Image (cartoon, rainbow, N blue to C red; front, side, top):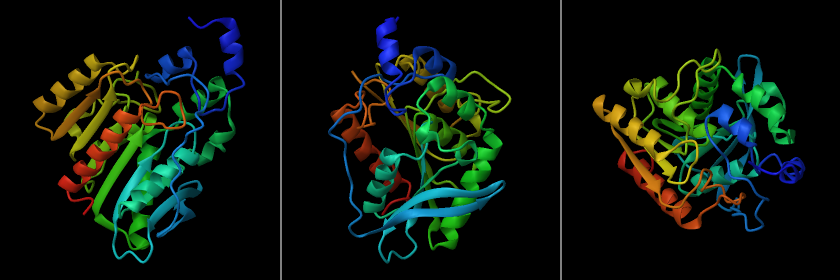
Amino acid sequence: MRSKTAMQESETLSRRECLTSAAATALGYTLAAGPVRAAIIKTGTDGLSAGMAKVKVPGGEMPVYYAKPVDAEKPPVILVAMEVFGLHEHIKDVTRRLGKLGAFAIAPDYYFRLGDLTQIAQPSQLMPLVNGKPDHELFSDLDATVDWAKSEGGDTDRLGIIGFCRGGRTVWLYAAHSPILKAGVAFYGSLMDPPSAAMPKNAFDLAAEVKAPVLGLYGAEDASITPDQVEAMKERLKAAGKTTEFKIYPGAPHGFFADYRQSYRADAAQDAWLSMQAWFKKYKVLD
């Protein structure tokens, strides 16, 4: 258990830094605690067209952040499914990194109906909001983003999705939903969330419905998405004849790719990024 002093100190931390143990357990995964790191990876926009746009969805216009090579003709489309903390700078940076690889990368702010989540510091306020996001609405928002990308010149015949934490769960579920998705990469996406009215089925429940190849990247020291859960998911997918692959990184906790948090593990993050590229190239998303 964390001390009272440590819990009080955590209340002053940025919304990016950690979830309390209770909130993380309710969510089905754990984020690493600790102050925001100073050595954050920063990717520029040289050679990119990048910025904010709006996509029409039920209930309004959804903000999206995109990045693609300047003057690219029909670049492949890669959706970036964010963490629960809103459309913050790390997710935008990942979007630019994908743009540098030749993709039309788009991070939709599908929590926009709930307000600006980047301004919510307390997990006790944040988690009830994001846990109330209906999966059917999430799928609709992602489908609308794909349609927008196509209208903007993206090649949705080469559609991929990448996601982190809750966004990793989104990868698994969208792979079960979308008939046109070519490949997905889930970074420590939760697999066995408890069911709710908004999220009636988890990734494990939907394993037999996965339609696209998915690469799962997990940490051996993830306290909630344990290696045992990953192995169970692997076996269920194998039994269903699905094309998937998993990597479990020794010594890596949840959030090992998040370079702005103390959970960051450079070796695992770098290998995971290269593995992601190889996966998307193998399944014809990236050139």
